Amino acid sequence: MCLSSMRPLLRCKGRAYGNSRQTGVGLPMALFIIIVLALLALAITELETSTATGASMSVLSTRAFYAAESQAQVALVELFPPGQAERNCSAVTRRFVFPTSNSGLAYCTARVSCLENVVAGETYFSITSTGTCGYHRDPDPAKAHIIPKDAAQRRVEVRAH
Image (cartoon, rainbow, N blue to C red; front, side):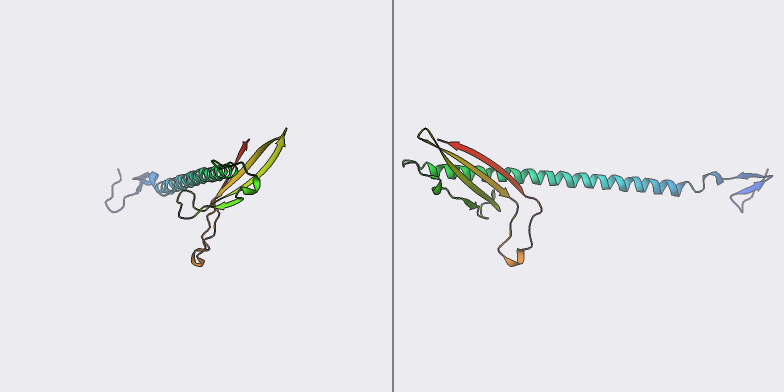
């Protein structure tokens, strides 16, 4: 039997004693685990980024829809003012920029087109309102570079008689 207090690994008659079979496994295993965890963290970050972008686009799309709908309703009131005679398409406001003080539709615009069709002596109006939210330039020169990357556009069509 070979025993030595000076060396942890001792060769006696061609056989190795001690922990020589375990050397070199810990470092590759640790690197593998670190790499796998880093890739997992990267995947979670990408998922979070795409989820945030999707939520932002959903909000912008909803705001654009309400901008278009609001301006279509304004156009209907301009065409059919309460207590007054019906007007023509020239009375319709063509473009409206919502004020920035309006927090719900800040940086939104709406464009309206109006067509008149006369059928059998009756006038029919077709109103198309397009709302856009997201693209803007701040009038303050110090903030002129602040432009969001995302924007949404929605269209509303109304036919009235």
